[in-house]
Amino acid sequence: MSIIKIPSLFDMHVHLRDPGFTYKEDIITGTAAALAGGFSGVACMPNTNPPIDNADTINYILDKAKNTGVEVYPVACITKGMKGEELTDFKALKQAGAIAVSDDGRPVENLKLMEMALISAYENNLPIISHCEDLAIVNGGVINKGFVSEDLGVKGIDRLSEDSVTAREIALAQKTNTKIHIAHVSTYGSVEIIRNAKRNGVKVTCETCPHYFMLTEQVLLKKDADYRMNPPLRTEKDVKAIIEGIIDGTIDCIVTDHAPHSPQEKSNFLTAPNGVIGLETSFAATLTALYHTGLVTINKIVELMSTNPRKILNLPKTEKYITVDLDEEWVVDVNNFKSKSRNSCFKNTILKGQVASACVSHHSLTRLYP
Ligand SMILES: [Zn+2]
Ligand SMILES: [Zn+2]
Image 1: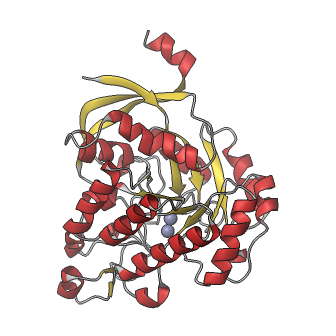
Image 2: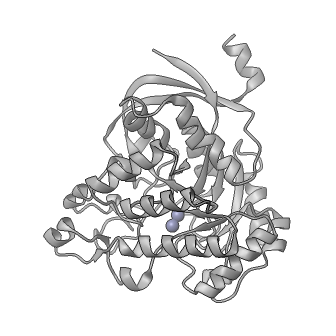
Image 3: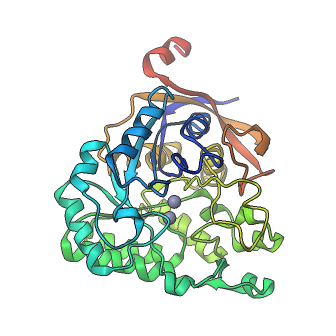
């Protein structure tokens, strides 16, 4: 047994589904899942119902999260109703408690509108997070375009969908000399585009998720919708590039993109909504794939899963700690999840490393572990 103490984790990309879709998840169950996974803070995405484009919804979320033991920071919409037509009032949303803006789940298709959003985000010192996807290229595609989509005879999504919008966002950030954060990077092309942009001084940061450095499209041959998310699982070449990007600092954060859906919704491979849950497996998956393989240190994982996301969102370092048993091996059993949903792409996987005690203050911890 090898127990260590590290700063508590922060996930800057979760979908808590509350308000509006509480049969999938709510703020109480989502934060319980976060605590179990070692997270003392999360930023929650605005594709709720109503969407987070108004102060009332922000107040509702902050109020419901108050006694959960998890800091919940709402991300507000870039455009009203996430319709891509008209910017929300960034200043008012920030005043109400929004930590960032994003239309996550959708791209802001109108280039001019996105440029205005970047400028307004800059003026209000509000981080802006882009979901990079070209809907015209996606055009009904359900998984990565390649051998597996051909094998299964289903419509594929070309990497160009992600890469082209990543390149567009970087061009906009460069032109306006403002910051941009790219969500869920999944392709070798996007890693390369972001690496070059950083070298050229563009203020771009980005995130990826454990499934993009642990799984490939091969698992989709099972035709199980629990392995379908957006962007989709790609290939060995992409996995390798994501890992290289993590090691060389191109990728700043590991997030979950925790996206709960009910078993009923996930029952049909082709028509199920995109998304997988991740709060209760993310840290263990990362330890298994990156630490126990000798690719990165624990300090690097703390940077990726605590320090950097907080920095990107202008939050101070956490004062909370977790204890971790680095060597505990366990099988992911979806029935043990605090989350309401079961759509884990790590189900029945053996992971190494587990949170031993969740999010205690530094003070009480020193008493426990002198
Ligand atoms: Zn997204
Ligand atoms: Zn998302």
